[in-house]
Image (cartoon, rainbow, N blue to C red; front, side, top):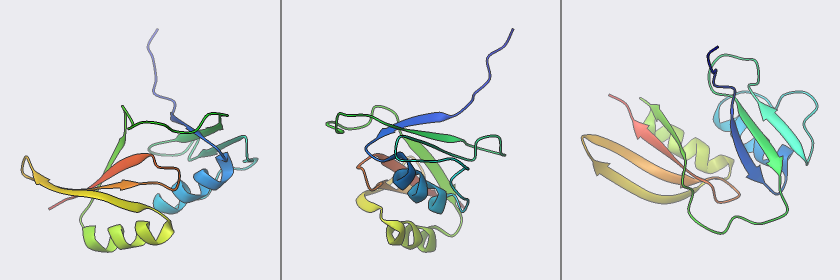
Length: 116
């Protein structure tokens, strides 16, 4: 028997709100039946699926795991994602790659690399 990758689960204070932000980032919609306690984006679709689960405790430290994305239209995508509610955290140009670290509306960090 083999293991398959189902989705990335993200703890949050309001599942459908944070799922809405990520649906905007990924140019898709929140899956049907999303609510403040549980919501998914792209479940059963092509590519990465995200699951959001409401938890009582707030985020208190830096993520030990984060999502990495890449795009050829880097500047426009950074502006678009910031317009959705992300915050700029830091920008890097290391290891032959240019990327920005952003934080979603609940403070979870993720990176967007410039693809050539």
